Structures are given as C-alpha cells and as structure tokens.
Length: 320
Ligand code: CP
Image (cartoon, rainbow, N blue to C red; front, side, top):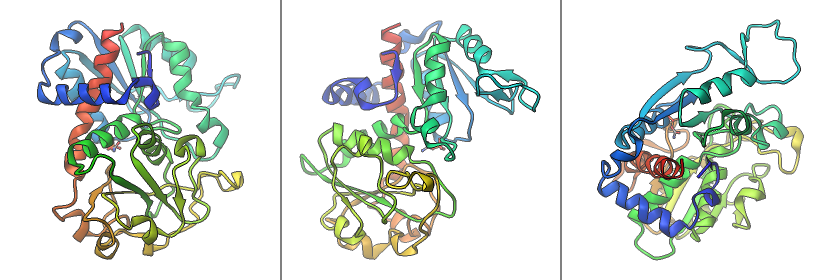
C-alpha cells in the first residue's frame, strides 16, 4: 500500500476489519515487521489522539517514530511554487519533503484544510506533494478533505458495538463556535457507505457535504427525522462545504443550538450509541448528560485509533 487517503486504498473492508481485530487481540504480534524501520509523523497542526495513537501503533510494530512539528521545531515551510521567498518561511517543501523522505521509510502527514481555497483543499494539494516528492508511502493523518485513520477506527468501533447486521448510522452536524474542516464527516460518510452500513446524514441547509464522499447516502435537513430509530449517532461540526455556493466555502452559516445532541435527541433513537471523534466542545456539540451516559462510546472509539493506524502501517511495512 503506497498511500492511505480513502477506503479503497485498504481494499476489501471485511478483510481490513478481520485484520483490525487480529491486531487488537495481539498488538505485538507483528513487532518484527518494523525492526530497523522509521516512520516520520509530520504535523502542520495540533493533535492529541492522532499524534499519540500513531506513535503507539508504530512502536507496537517495532518501528521508530519521529515526530516533526512544522514551524515549531522546523523551519516554516513555503508550500506555493514560483514565489519569491522573502517572507518568514525559511524553506520550501520542494526540498523539505524529499529530505524528510531520506530519513524514513513511511511518512504520515497532518495538514488541515485552509478553508479559503476550496480547489486547493479538495485537490489534496499538499498531501499529493508528499506523495510526489517523498518517494515514500504516505498516510493522511487528516488532510484537506479526509481523515481516514479516524474513519477506519470509527468503523472498527461500530463493528464492535453493533447489535444488528446493518445498523442505522446517523451522521449529524452540530454547532461549534469556529469554522472547522469537512475532513472528518467526509471520511466518515465514505467509509460507512464503503462498508455497506445504513448511513443517514443530517445537516442544516447550506451544509450538504460533497457527493463525492456521501455517495448517495440520504441527506435530511430535519435532524429529529434523521435520528429516528438510529443505532449510532455520530455528531460532528463542519463548516460550509461550498457545494451549492462555492463563495460560502469554509464559512459558519449556522450556530443553531437546537442541533446540539441532548437527551431529547437521543430519545427518538433506538437506544443509540453516541460517537464523536474528539476533541469535543461539551454543551455545544453534545450535552454533558449524553456524553457522560453509558451509551457514549467516545473513549473506546479513541482507543481504536491505535488499531486503525497499526493496520495501515502494517500493510505499508508488508509492501515496502
Ligand atoms: N480525532 C482526532 O484526530 O483527534 P486529534 O485532533 O487530537 O488528533
């Protein structure tokens, strides 16, 4: 496997899940694979779960993880081609990426959408430059449009907690004070559809996700209607994806607190499990009562980030 951006990169989902549960049962079982190998974890943005789970997964596989925080521990990097570098950015990615590639066997990159230039973000411009210039397999640790390690962990968690073969999974927008990227909901939608689950998406008008990721899943603008009979409620905020009006891309169009997941929302579900990728804004996205309830599985969901990362790294090590 040379890249991990989308579910198709991991192949048949049944096999990927089988492998995930094998890795979870015996985390050290493939420690020999990474002996003498190095993974570089490059962070252009903050992280708690992704940083720690990726390091843990690499260590479980016997790899040496190197973490680089761009701009804090490295030179600030220029990403645009053809510019006169007379500002505060001391190095260009045209040199920095191949140099990083010289020091490792796998590269994993976190670089959030800028939310100003939709074409730049949706072309995964920076991540593709890592693919082109590093000469190494590349993992997205959340990039312009996707967060596949999170979505794979979400799927593993749903597989563990589901009580029927094809559960109803509702991805619902919820309010947040800041403009957030669409990477998590994009990936969640495409992984749920790829896995054949019954996905329903609920979001206010103007927030419809790109159909490239939702792939025909029903989109409702009435949240309560969407939540009826749900087995899993996956809450997440995202900014305007700019599908219908590109000028609104990245904007906050709605802060309706009526979309916050509370006990009344959960009451119309089929005793659903509550999920969120974390970090979560309590009493914006979800009330304390819901996230602290026994139906909340946000911590096991975060724990599965090690499992998803480990399966991806294992596949890459096997194909080096
Ligand atoms: N869910 C997730 O990616 O968390 P972090 O931003 O803390 O890595």
